[in-house]
Image (tube, rainbow over the protein chains, first blue to last red):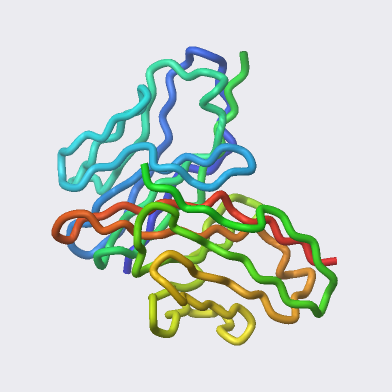
Length: 111
Length: 118
């Protein structure tokens, strides 16, 4: 079946630190992969996506590369800011319009 | 970008009453919308797929008689929590699928609705 596993949080970093949030997936076929971000009290917003192997999604300094060989889509950012504090969800899209989400990873960035 | 609006954002009700949550796609037509429930440790659980003009498809373990879903138009889906109990207290999030070209598309989320059942 399809599933998404991401590292448990919370992750606490100092401002300007390097961020990695791991995400691995299990899927039949070749799903599209996504990272969503949820700020406190809000719904989810699309952060970046990749639709095929070796694609790199990027947005707002965040990057993730679709690695088919390791079935991973790790999220990275070179220098985090306090405003990046949020919950990050890894997700895969299968069967045209159905999505599976990981459990979310809370990021706390301290000044 | 596309906007999905959810209402109300917060609702408090007494045990045994019913609560309706609306999800609207403001600038696009969505033949398919989804309802999720978010648990305290941030996990997002797909409850059901709402299809315009037909019955919703519920995920395993979700009571369809308790969580009534109606997708009456291409821009509106509603979730009604019937005879709510304290264990139904949660954050409910809807999303609408915007189909682009071919089989590609994007999912847009509402702001979420915090339900508290006393």
